[in-house]
Length: 68
Image 1 (cartoon, rainbow, N blue to C red):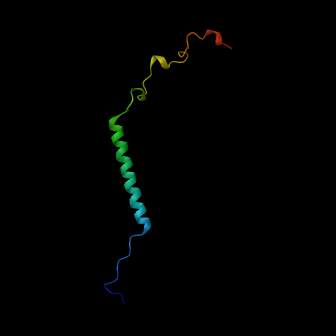
Image 2 (image 1 turned 180 degrees about the horizontal axis):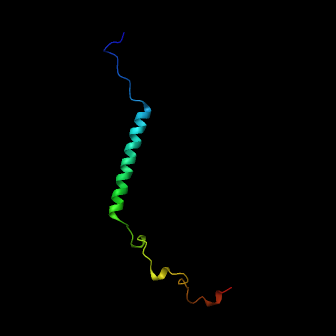
């Protein structure tokens, strides 16, 4: 016979872990969305090519005797 004075059992640890993981995923999704809206923080992170980025343009002038 059950009585009304029995306490309800605590939530299972897996339920608490699942809730925490859902909260963590929601926070990561929100931070990603805000970062995506804010855009890059540095001018060189835009993926724009510059004339200095062409192959062979990194010549160090004044070091002509170092050819092998």
